[in-house]
Image 1 (cartoon, rainbow, N blue to C red):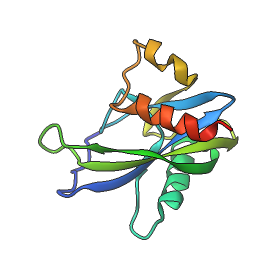
Image 2: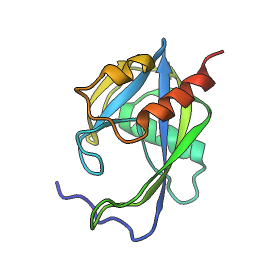
Image 3: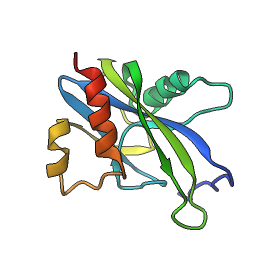
Image 4: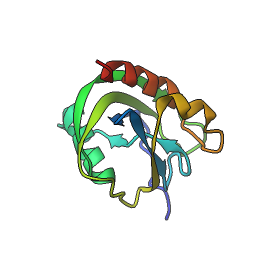
Length: 144
């Protein structure tokens, strides 16, 4: 599948660090951008959507999960690394799993529930940049 042409201006996106029983959901991207990397579920905000609406939609589309959005955990800017790559501002939220089991769409090809303190020892997994910091910040918002 050919990657879609990226816009020539920055895109607003959202992602969710979804916690369930002390673990966070990591998903592996099946296509660009970040093909083969584990990250958080999420995607672009559509015109007229709030960040929370976009996040709930993207998580549902990509994983089928129902979540409770807690709070903004951080943000990350992804600059184009090569010609034709996208420029994204990703707003990352802490969230709790509410219902359903993951059912991945065509954008993802694997998922894992991982203990946040085990992220550093997952040397065999390719993680998107800044992922550990966002998960740690989200974890602090989830804990009572």
